[in-house]
Length: 132
Image (cartoon, rainbow, N blue to C red):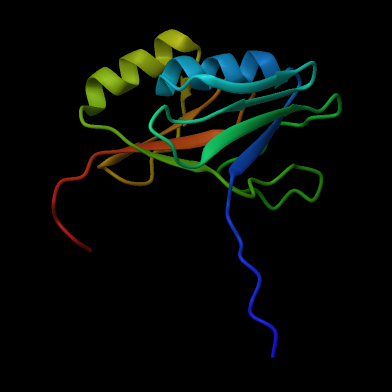
């Protein structure tokens, strides 16, 4: 029997109307440098290594709908980013100053859902030390 192939997750890729613009938002939000940049593709990653984020220009991009809706024509959310922060208030202020918007619907008291400038939802959470 052949050995199982090795798999390494190298990035999560977000489509956007403008890859460079969305990459700049996450670069400023996370403080990660650009690893690679092409006209319609940008990669950023943590400076100390690890899985990064990639951004791809998609001219037909439609922002996802969150929370989900029964509308068959709405682009439903298929994934989101969970970002741990050490101070919710300052993280929110920072994200909002960069162009994020706070979602109207907040399903948990200890998590904040935001939208990036392209409309992708992402969550901030603080580790309180309690396990669920």
